[in-house]
Image (cartoon, helix red, strand yellow):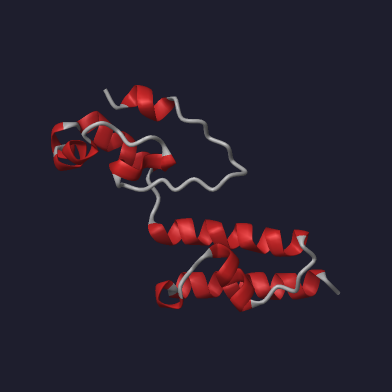
Length: 117
């Protein structure tokens, strides 16, 4: 069963965990045995699929989460909040920036510049 492996994972909220629909890289845990088989047969595993649908996040939402962590790291390091710094710390390539991510970047830059006044 997949569930003992899923529920035995530690969920530390201070550490970014990547939760995606890809079972083979599930939460950075040890790879599941036959993970490829699970992916291929998700339609036959309705409980597992339901759990994954409820707990999976999109790549974009994970990037937004990393942006927030990058912002907090810049503030802790007393560095000026700049676009390039946020993107570098969050490890987001330019071609992956969506309008939603761009809006978040601008909000964080504005917030960071006004907090330092």
